[in-house]
Length: 258
Ligand SMILES: [Zn+2]
Ligand SMILES: [Zn+2]
Image (cartoon, rainbow, N blue to C red; front, side):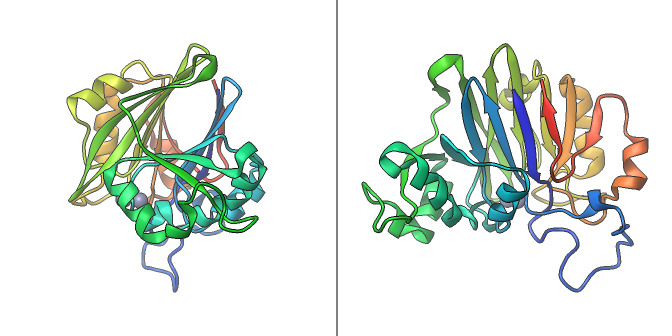
């Protein structure tokens, strides 16, 4: 299984337009963050999770040339805004229609933002075309690939927490959440890799702070935990050396093979 962090930034990206007072070291390329998304290759399938505003650039940089299906964790703009650029992948698929999974909130936002992409086939050649479906609790796919989903509390909405299993490996992707439910906790316990929301140092009502993310990572005890969805208050050069064992700060373009 190959996991590529296409983006690891919070909703505004890092740095924010006009700069801020965080003092983050912008000479360090690991502190330049596009909106959070991840690409997983496993059992011969290419799975794309979320597509933010920089999705096209992320695909070009990371040489993503194929997607078999797409999962939207939730309908917030930093995860959905790049979905029109899935058109290129629709174009390459047999039937030109991309399977798209999300929760009710995500599907509602897709219907509102991309009504032209919800036909049986592309409205015009090269248009996006999505076959939208509610993400089941367990999605069984060919070649032994299995994806389990759980709801994660994210302020007034819920995010899909995902555990991808295949080839004897397990990757849990828990972005945009304030805490883990008991179900989410148990699902990630035996993961080889856990990617976890870690917004900033100070508390936030709908995201984990650094101390909350560290405590959650310690309790879950996954093989390795990578923190993502980071603001400019998480300076890679300052904080990565202080991370406890098995915890790391993710960065754009980070690729992990398990
Ligand atoms: Zn987000
Ligand atoms: Zn969100």
